[in-house]
Length: 302
Length: 206
Image (tube, helix red, strand yellow):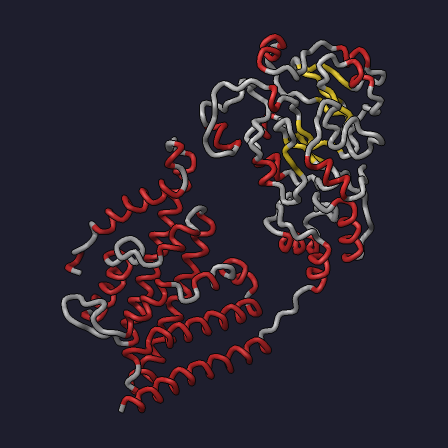
């Protein structure tokens, strides 16, 4: 009796399974949908990091949009020129040039910036910024707890010995993940700049220079020396803060030389000889991990 | 008239009095998962109505044609129903993709999400097994009753989900304390909403 029941159960379940499999096999033939083979081809040349910088939730939906033509072939900011060319080739359209962007940190404070209180909570900029506005006295500076590091899908950011995130321009793809993750990204602490932008101002505060100097020795003091030194009229003090006009800047370095605060750096992929190892992080930057990593890789840098 | 009233009671009983989400707490995962935005919850509600009705139709037939006559239904119903519903949803997905791309785009991504979802499975089970939905007496549904009851449950699911999504969209801009933002607030809202639905218990003597 029990044996019979087992056989019956097995038969019943087997029958259901058989019917279902036959039905599904038939259906997959009958209702086969031709997908555009170009989607696969485009997808294979995309970086696949699903960073979302192009405005699509994943590389797959970006590939669909690229095939449909709703976004331009240069839409993949992370992939830059290489991917844009590959996409154009896969789609059989004309190649176009990409204006690549990279991330730039407007702060040189780090360890020298004064803290209002001793923070011992979760090591996250987002967390500390919610605690009475953060432990930094500076209202616009970098906390240095590394939310941008964690957010970077390309492993292009590292904290240096000063407690500041340094952007490895070889790896930075301009996806903006760090800007979105940074609690002060919206007020310009991290900014996307053209990849050949040669000069970086390492300050983001608009407080009065006297106040600023009280809480951070590395700040811009709005002295306008850079403005006067610039031969191409490319740097101006706007709202008590030096701002570079990258359309005009030639990267001559005159402003870097005259800045009494050493608040301006050479920076960028196009700079032949950066002032320091990385990111134009400034001559003051001590040795830190990325430099060693690069040296191990053969020391190539751009 | 008698039957019409009976069917109407089944519909209301399934949709409101025994609301699957808010009085019985079955199918909570999609309830919190997709209720963040109105658009997705409408899509989800549509997919649930669709899949639940189909699933009950299929499982009712399998139960009465195969499982019950063999006497194996009593212990085999869960695997058998999962098999049937999963295969059916898979089939429907393929069919829609080919025949109605527009419908596929609006329902498509939700279909695999609710394949043998607990709410779907619970409703399919209740429709064939006695004692789950008693209305005073132990009771087994006929085909028509099962269908109407399932439709009621699915509509109840949709009403709860969509009204909850509307509330959550309002809450996005409400001055909620920082620590309570997001899921904690959603749980509290669901609890309050649930109070309202429990209050419908006993309506029409159901």
